[in-house]
Length: 174
Image (cartoon, rainbow, N blue to C red; front, side, top):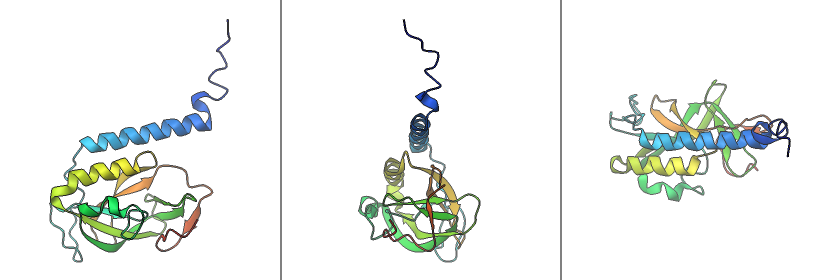
């Protein structure tokens, strides 16, 4: 007969690996739920620069999904227009070849691109972004410096120990 009374105090779900696994599963669940929820799109704020309509849907990207970067070809067919933009937040080098951004709390700006999605490809674009970002990032609502509401993907992990970046992520930080 074995004693399982210490099973949860040594490792288990309370260990750093267990907590990380729980966070990853929670991130995936949030991403899956987001696939089935259509909140009518985040673009409801008018902007003189982009002049969006109520039906326009925007994503703000700041890393490997920016034009000219590694994963942009996976989303390129969904994009009607891309322009450089800035949102409030903090940008970090993850040390793994992609950046990490936190949009809550202000404290700086994150430079990237505002992607206006093709109306006929919005659902497919949301699915693709969610699949690519699940587990590390979660979708959040942001507003650009020009007043355009967009969806961005925020890093769900801790930023303690990560290097803070200024300007636009180039992919050469690591």
